[in-house]
Structures are given as C-alpha cells and as structure tokens.
Length: 360
Ligand SMILES: NC(=O)c1ccc[n+]([C@@H]2O[C@H](COP(=O)([O-])OP(=O)(O)OC[C@H]3O[C@@H](n4cnc5c(N)ncnc54)[C@H](O)[C@@H]3O)[C@@H](O)[C@H]2O)c1
Image (cartoon, rainbow, N blue to C red):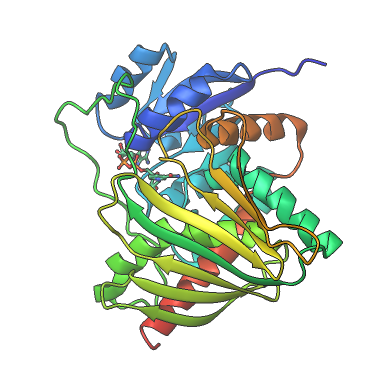
C-alpha cells in the first residue's frame, strides 16, 4: 500500500536545522517539504534556495495559518521552542520538536493539553531512542528481564560527560548565516515561577543537556506511566557537574553529568544485572551512518565461560531514523514513542532535581 507524502514545513533555520533535520526531511521520500520559517530576515530564503524548498515564512505564525501544511518540525532557541510548538499544535499541525519540549511542568502540561484539545500530536526529538544500537540494547534488556536468565537488574547508569558534539560533522553541509538585519526580541520564557533568577541559566543548561540521558534511562527501564522520581542530587555549584539518582520503575538509575574536553562525545549507558551487563556507547552525534556501539557481558557459571561480545548494528543515523519514524507515524496515526505526554515526566524530573539542588 502506498501512502500520500506528509505535507511538511520547518521552523527555525539554525545550526541543528541546517546540519541535521532539514537535510534529513528533504531527502526522505515520505516528505513533501513545502516551507521554511525563520525570524532572522533573509536566512530562510538562502536555505530554501539551496534545498529547493518552495515557500518561506517570516515566522511560525504564518505556518499556523497555512492550511496546506499538516506537520511541522521545530528547532528554535531551547527556552522558547515550547511556545512555538504549542501555537502550531493549537493550529492543528502535528509537531516534531527538538528537546527540551518545555522549560517547566506548567508549560509541558499546557503543551500536552493543547495537543489533546486540538487533536494534533507532538513528538519530541530524543534521537537516542531511534538509534539502532540502543534499540538492540532495549531488546536484550527486555529479554533478560522477562526470562530472568541474568538475575535481578541491579543498577542502570548513564555517563554523560559531553565533549565535542559536532565532532565528525559533515563538511559538505553548508551552514548559511543571516545577512545582518533586525531580529525580533525573544518572548519571555516560561521557566518555573519558583526558580531564582540567578539559577535560571544553569537550570536551562541542565534541562536541555541531560534531559536526553534521563529520557533514555526511562526508556530502557520502561517508565511508561511516568512514575520515575528523584531520590538524591549531588551537583556542584556550576549546576551540572555531579550525580543524580533516580528510582525508575523500582530500579536505581544514576545520571553522571559533567562537561569535559573529550574530543568526541563521551556518553554511555550500562545496565547491570546479577549475571552480566549491557552497555551502549554513543557515536559522535553528527557522524552519519554510525549507531551506538554495544557490549554484552555474560558472567558465566560453573559450566559456562564468561563472555564479552561487541555488536555493531547496521549503518544508520539516529536523527534520520527519528525523522523517518515521525513521518511514518503521522501517516499511520499510531502513537509516537517519544511523545509529549512521555516527555512531561522528564521535565518534572529536571524541575525536581533543581528544587533539591537549590534546597527549595
Ligand atoms: N537533539 C540534539 O542532539 C540537539 C543538539 C543540539 C541542539 N538541540 C536543540 O535544537 C534546538 C536548536 O538549536 P540550534 O543550535 O539550532 O539553535 P539556533 O539558535 O542556531 O537556531 C534557532 C533558530 O530559530 C529561529 N527562530 C526563533 N524563533 C523563531 C520563530 N518564532 N519562527 C521561526 N524561527 C525562529 C532563530 O532565529 C534561529 O535561527 C535547541 O532547542 C536545542 O536544545 C538538539
């Protein structure tokens, strides 16, 4: 059976849009890429000209009133893109948006409510959930838990020490910059009302970076009902270096966070069972065609030897798989795996982490 292409537009022509999402959506056969919106004058026109995208818009509001568009991608400034997404959902457009979906529980809830009342749906760009290596680890974790062959799941830990996230960036992708011109002032953000002004920048930084890691742990540990909770927080005064312990579905899950000068992207997740462990290590994020590398350790017994194996999933790029999934699920009407409803929990956890960190 063949499906009609998804009539698609995109909001924001910044780095992520130009280096990741626009080239992906433009090249997917399921997508009819109709237009680009950007508030910096002259930028959308350059990018649209380069990719042969027919229409440009001066802001996302013009897309809201374009009836020919059914689905929209969004990568705006991270404290403001929730407002953009909510406007698009209110106008009935299905939305694929970058993380963080929202900067407060209040805003996250209003996005979920808007989607419910308009009937439009929102998927959040947690690309790690579409990475073929991570999906293989999820499959093995489910198998080990269901069979009990490796005993109890003792600990999940995500090590996210950052590094150079653009390492291995494709030099053939052109990044256009706006000709100088006036840019409208940003709207006020919707950070939690209890957040002290002096903590706001560090909170937004923690939220936009480690929301990925928290969401991935919840994915591996099946927190479908959004019951994960924060049990302990040890962050330095910089607001991001340290350890956070969560309870996710009854399993202790640790987030190790820092920024180091690693040349590529220093991130892995390890799931420890009594009888062995599963590990997935992130590839350089912009390296196309390379999924996470996975390791499987089976501790053996009196009759079998311990075994460490390393698997490589087929070549694929998590961001491209995420875009393909979005288009497919818009068309089929099935639920998005990384939905706005699911993301509500990540935003709640980040607010809770900061309440504890600040002693409020
Ligand atoms: N998933 C990932 O791995 C990953 C990595 C980096 C960044 N991100 C996320 O991507 C988002 C964008 O990051 P970036 O580095 O591209 O930012 P950026 O600042 O380069 O781009 C944002 C663009 O949106 C435009 N914009 C703002 N308001 C607009 C509106 N109302 N209508 C149209 N355009 C508007 C801005 O002018 C700017 O060009 C951030 O939210 C960030 O959290 C995700």
